[in-house]
Image (cartoon, rainbow, N blue to C red; front, side, top):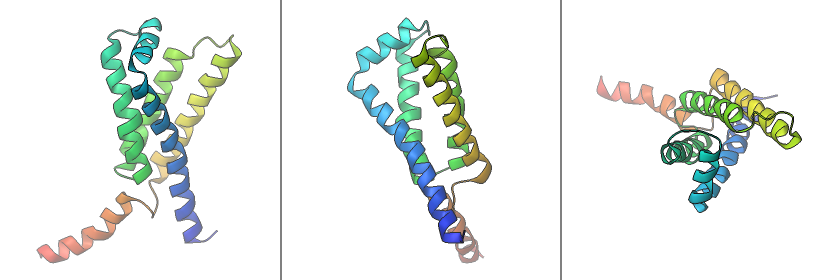
Length: 141
């Protein structure tokens, strides 16, 4: 595989994972009452705050992941969010649907940890910032 293939693969992976979060977050925004009721039914305290946190992670961090902005930190937070979501909302592993959702979230966390390990790739805002830093340092000196 050449450098361009790696760059495209890293960007495609970020976009595919990030879009999943964006779609989920937009769905929550479209039905806030139902989402908060589901959060409350799970026994989680402060459903309004949990809803806000979910929106920030799914929409805000999802967009940051797609763009490759502060990617390692963003992916780490999103991996933790996916694991907490799995344990909090999909722990009834005797139910086939919940079993699938639990391991889907665990798998997403695994993919995000790959992003933490290897970074955003060449087609990202992080890479653009890294390319510009030497130019900025030269301009200051």
